Every structure is written in structure tokens, then in C-alpha cells.
Length: 177
Image 1 (cartoon, one colour):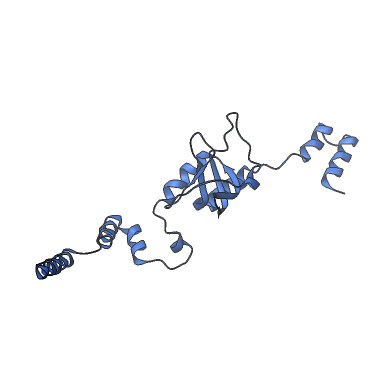
Image 2 (cartoon, rainbow, N blue to C red):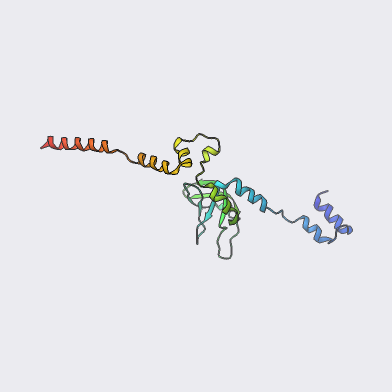
């Protein structure tokens, strides 16, 4: 028979100390703390933190987004103040008319303290074996040089192009007069 039937049979026979209490221990839900820790580590790029004083979550990533829990994830318990867990891991970010986090798992804030510093500057594409741009590699290896390059690209025109455009403008203005 099943483990539960064997345990209750042994408890009736008096084979286990504690009798019925031992049989109830078999039905005790498994401790999932270690499993949740493993999920926290494996899905570190899918962490989200609850915003203060409301139940919206902000994802932890370079382009963090504000989202709410999907209604199918309402099994998470609220505390005495009606607040959801402070930290969660989400499996899916669902973008409908309102962004949602779906398939969530609550995690302990102490676990995030070790992981978040390691996430700063990570190129997820590079980690997953995808191709990454030279700019992304430069940003990780030398952030100061990457900032200079980004500033150069952010400027639409250099000084020579601006001077040439100004000269053309003044020439057209002079031709009209």
C-alpha cells in the first residue's frame, strides 16, 4: 500500500513511538525552503520587489518595469497589513493592457542580498551563449570608456557638421536678401 497506509498500520500496531502523531508526520507538507532558494538563484534575473505601501512590483533588471501580480497568482498570502510578499521570483512577464507577473514564488529578502550585487553589469545575452555587441562587452569591461562612446553616439552631429550646416543656412539667407 501507500506510505500513509503503512504508517497508519504501524501506528495502530504500536510500532512507532508517538502512534497517531507519527502517522500525521507522514502527511506533513514537504519543506520547500531549499527549493525556493534554488529557484531564487536560478531565476535571479526574474526577481521583483514589491513597491512600498502598495502591491505593485518592480522587476530587478537594467530596464526595470512596474507590474502587478496576475490574478491567477492570487494564492500568495498577504500579511496583517494586506501586503503581498516583499520579494518574488516570476516566471513570466505578461504585457496586456496592464503588465502582469505570472507564475510567481515568494522568496526571502536575505537571499537577494547575496545575488543582487552579482547581477549588476551582467549581459544576459552573453551569458546565455547569444551574440552580444561590442558596445555591451565594452560596457562590462570598461564602463568609463563605454560612457564616452555612448555620448559620442548620442550627439547627432559633430562640430564640423554643425559649422557646415550653419554656413549653408547663412548662404541661403544671404541669397534671399
